[in-house]
Image (cartoon, rainbow, N blue to C red; front, side, top):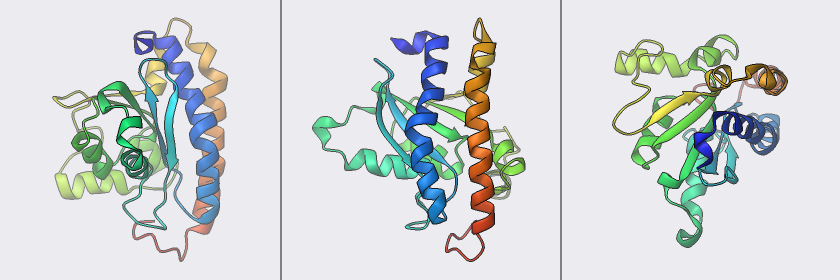
Length: 198
C-alpha cells in the first residue's frame, strides 16, 4: 500500500493540492468563496478520485471538505469506493463541522497542509478556533488527533520526518505562496458577500 511509503505519500499529497485542488480554488476564490479545498485519493495507488473547493456562496455548509463529500455521495454507488479505501486530503485543518462530517461518513484518516492557527493568523479566518472554543470549550490543538474514528496528519510534519525533508522545500513553498496570493484576493473581495462567517 502506497500509504506505507512516507516519501511517496508526501510528494503525492503536495502534488494533488497543487494540481487537483488549487486550480479549482483559484476559480472559487475569483467568485468570492474562501480558500479551502479537499480531495479524495485512492490508498492503493494515490490517484485522485475527486477534488473540490469551498462553495459557501451557494450554501454556507459547502466548506471545501463538505463540498467534496457532497460530490462524493453524488457519484454512482458502483463507482464510489468505500471511505476505508480512500485518503481524505484537505488544504487546511478541518473545522468542527468538517471534522464531524469526516467522522460521520466513515473516513479513518485525513491529511492537512495548513493548521487551524494558520487559518487564523496567516489567512485572517479565525472561525475554526473560535467555534471550537466557544461551542465545545476546546483550546487550539485540543481535539484528539488520533481517536477511535480516525487519525489526522500534518503534511508538513510528514515531510519533516522523511529521510530527506529538504526535497519537499520547493513544493511546500510553491503551495504556501499560491495560497498566500489567494488569501489576499479573498480578503479584498469578501466585504458584502453572503457568507455568514466571512
